[in-house]
Length: 405
Image 1 (cartoon, rainbow, N blue to C red):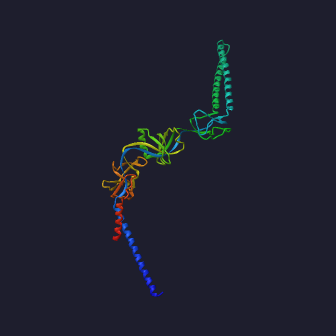
Image 2 (image 1 turned 45 degrees about the horizontal axis):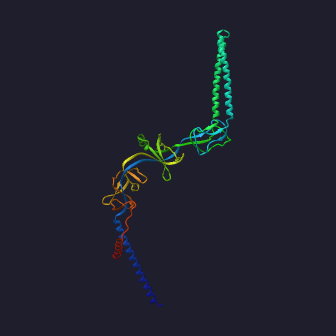
Image 3 (image 1 turned 30 degrees about the horizontal axis):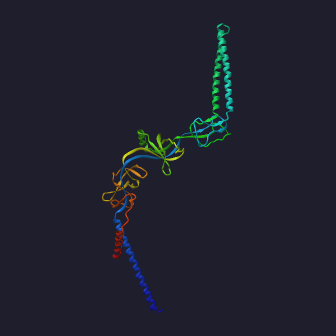
């Protein structure tokens, strides 16, 4: 191929490359202009948000804490005499009644001791009877001077000695009877029996625990509150019986109701800055179990006609809590508020900063600043889809921008 043909082909390729670069630059500029135009339009338009009006209702005030379920009474049942365990008469995990026999210890040794005490008592009673008869006859004989007064005094002292011996024998009989009765181990309280800790056939003594009984009807829940709540709790308790609920720690559903505060501890724990409280629950259906962890909610007051808004409307700022309030001109302003507490799981009680009926933004706050114009929608409501006419206008506006560039 000749040199002039090669030069012509190179020139054509260079011209085509320049034309392509120019067309790409023109297209990019058109798209950027359209984007700038669209963005400017979006910024100038109202911001869609979700808004809710401030409502008024009676709001119960609660204090919440983490608590531990505690049995009303817990007893470790131990034998009071030493001997071979013959049998157990309770079922593990079942309730036993107060006074019922739950274990039997070999009674033969204690029965023999009791019988010996009774025999000794009868023997000494017979001697006392003889001594009293002799004393009676001696009193008649001394009047006739047949015996001396010294013999009479000796006989009288013998009677007193035998009376003391009989009294000691009677006490020994009672003690032997008590020891014999202790071979039947009885339940000191009505409660649930735990897992047995000894087996029949073993020789047990007072240091061995047979079983642990827990009384769960009613039952206690022990919890702690910060010391700054002490005056509030004491004042509320002086006015009424404070109701308490127990909630599950996983999903916070109510586990047990009908509880009430019974005890406020007499001192504050200086290491934690908290004080302990105890609430009692009827636990009729065994909703609570000793050792269980629960969330505790105690009602201490009710605020009449309190102002309530959704909790998600409240934002945290450097100067405290605030909300966005929508004015009559659909422009928002930041308003500092004081949150008094929870009205429910999703609403908050406002102490100051708002009025009844004002609208607050609950969704879309991240796009707002003071003075922003908004389009307010109700919860669950979505903006209306653009009509065909609006889409045509938008397309025409976008196309015009490209041609002008």
